[in-house]
Every structure is written in C-alpha cells, then in structure tokens.
Amino acid sequence: MSNISPTLTLNNTETKITDLLKQYTNYYNSSPNTKQPIVLRITGGWVRDKLLGHECHDIDIGIDHLSGVDFAEGLKEYVEKSGNTEALKGSIYKIEKNPDKSKHLETCTTKIYGFDIDFVNLRSESYTEESRIPSIEVGTPEEDALRRDATLNALFYNLSTMEVEDLTGRGLQDLKEGILRTPLEPKKTFLDDPLRCLRLIRFASNYNFKIEENTKKIILYTVFN
Image: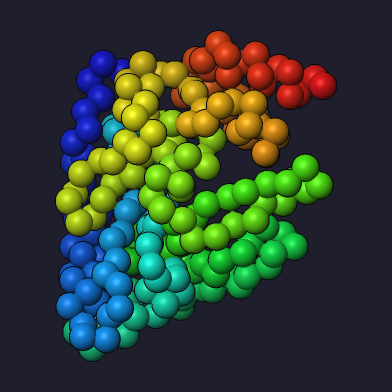
C-alpha cells in the first residue's frame, strides 16, 4: 500500500457527478434566500476505495446545514430547469425519520449518471447506558469523522476544494499501512456499538488489513464478555 496518495483520480462519470453537485452547490450558495452556505463531502467507503485504486459505484454525500432531502429535491429541480435530462433519472427515495430504529435524520437516495447516491447530514452520535440506540443530531465534519468505526473509513473528499480530508489525523497513514484503528478510544467506540467489532473484523478479512493491537484486545474483550 505504499503507493497510496491523497490525490484522487476521478473517472468520467465521477467527474460529471462532482461537477453537477458543485454547480448546484454554487447556485444554492449564491441565492439571496440562502441563510447559511453549504459544503458537500463524499464520505466513507468511496474515498477509502478510490485511494486504494478500487472502483466504487455507491457514493455517500455528507451535507452540512441542509437536509439530504432538501438538497436532493433542489438538485432535481435545478437539473430539470437546465434541461440536463441525462443526469438525474428516476425518483428520489426518502427515508423518513424513525427514532426507534436510530434514524433521527431524514436521508434520501437517487441515481445520478447511473451511480447510486445517498444524501445524508453530517452527524454526531451519543449513547446512554440504557440503550444501544444512539441519539443522533446534525454534527460538524469532525464529529462525523470521530463517530466512525475506523480512521481509514473516516476520510472525506471535500467537493469545494477537491481534496481528501483526514480529520482524525490518522486515516491516511493507517490506510497506507493497512491498520484498522478506531478514531476514538476503542473501548468507547465498541461499547457504544458492539457491531463495530464485527465490521472491523470483516474489513481485516476482506482487505487483508491488520487490527491495531489495543483495538484488537478491546474487540476480544467486547465479544467474549
């Protein structure tokens, strides 16, 4: 993995997608009715896989200051007015809030140039001892990065700067070395959500990554206690 670089090379379809998203973001931000400008970030697995040289057709767009549903509906209207019928075909599928199932924020999904695109808010999570279902609120990019299961899954691609953001400070290095490490102290990460143990084990198997020693100890403790 020594050839991993923070520079991403987009294919033709990814370039068309990011160009469209940037165009609409600039249009939205320049409107006199806009109270707070937005920044889009591609989050999670797509960024990791692109840095590893793998293609990925599922893209999660993290948005600050605007719900994913509002953004997607505004994007659809913008595309229809521009006459770009190729870009966004089909419906926008909204996933409603459902706090009982840990869905505190509306999200939505659609296809842009044939890619599956999810629009979600950047978010923060907090847990209590009484429930493993987190309380979720709109969060900062840093809060969203820290809530993730591993530093190499917390890398973002900022569509304003077209640069990779490593807000945990360890993601790029861990990806280069093939190390799975939690953004926060591992005991907190796994006690908050024990399923993260299984996710890291699966990543270690699928990508031939190594789990950092202290993280491995906490996984074993969490699974067998």
